[in-house]
Image (cartoon, rainbow, N blue to C red; front, side, top):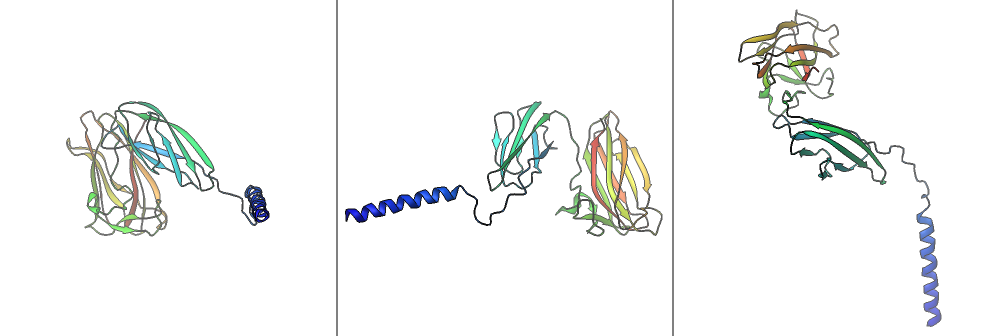
Length: 253
């Protein structure tokens, strides 16, 4: 009996040693990880509060995330929202990890400033409630810049109209992408105005595009007055079918 147990013990030890050795070696037919993780992110303040920062995770080949918001707070969410106590500069670090435990990290200084950052709702027209823009038809052809849905204005009953909060005495760049049919005279009538004070910043027809199958970019400069608190974007059908996408507004520094 003792000899038998001694044999079992010796066999077990050999098996364990063999397993330990083979575990450190690549498996037969294993494939090198050719797409290691790459950490990347952007951020913007919420339109509700400058203290509330919305983080967008642009990392690739990763499924586990570790955020350090630079104020002692952390998160493991993919796209977290963090509320800071007040203004300041915060060093935010993101570590992205894949299933092979490979990591990549990036660090960005986040500026939290008490300033209104205007933004159009449903700027890419992929909204469940289209009433935020008025009346339009969704269209994916030709392929819009966001590769999903554009807003089609095909008759006089369709239009785009939205009013947002802005800061007075600031210069903004209002832009969008669009494409139109070849027949007619205009892709639409655009009005950018201060609805409270009756000031028209832009009031003109949009030129038709040369190519009816490719979106083009167009932008307008708006210089708000000290009394301006709202900006209205109004776009109406004129005489040719057109599609629009990514209506954006950015402060000109």
